[in-house]
Image 1 (spheres, rainbow, N blue to C red):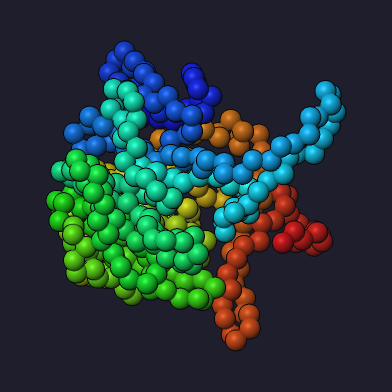
Image 2: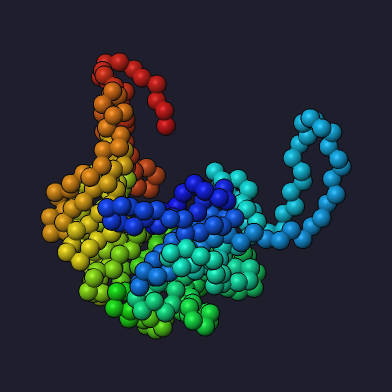
Length: 350
């Protein structure tokens, strides 16, 4: 399954490719907005996804007729929502993210959620009967700072059940392969400027929520259940690197891969073969594969930047540590210019 912009309408849309010798491709969705968070149903017959449903314009402002060829400023923008723009994105599209379902062979998409709430991270339960997602389905949700919950959506009836209820954000839910548990990320509410997220597990019905890998003061991301449902793999950022970790239920987290790189594992099969992307000082992201039994030996599967890097000289990178206020240790890097000479002075870019 993939997202692209070929065909009509002009928005991004989803395509399916048959993985046989012929490799036929078919367009699955024809939508006015772009789909995201696409997930196969366990039986392969359906695709779930999220998509922005634009808000209806409740304001009507009659603008004067603009002379042909004249360069006027943009029309007025009326803002009636608390969160209407973000850094590096600008103004956000007016509307709400909803969950949809479409037959895997293509057809009309059916909207599963409604009302003015944002719905994110939908994941199928192994029996294919429900989608687990994060949202905040309360009145004036946009005014609730650092707050979200996890919900279950029954596909047949459309009933939505709230599974978490603690004060603080809960998100990125992932049902276990045996269908008995749900892993998720979150933290108890705080007004601290920054806090590391924690890893939690609860029952399929939301019972017995508990933190695991509690000693790990780093944020887990990209959760992947072990195939026997006895533990969870996840990526961890630590001092400018990213590696794969594992935590059995009720046990401490242990580091699986090591290295001064950014490794993002996205899939692990039943035989313990992991696949992901890896980047390092002098290596833009490429796809790698390795065995969980021998993570030190990684096979690089792509070399998409080799043609460019072959003609470029990159500078040496040196890791540094220094003391800050209150005796805190601060870590970073100096990237030296190519052909660096110790006796020469260079301008510093911070």
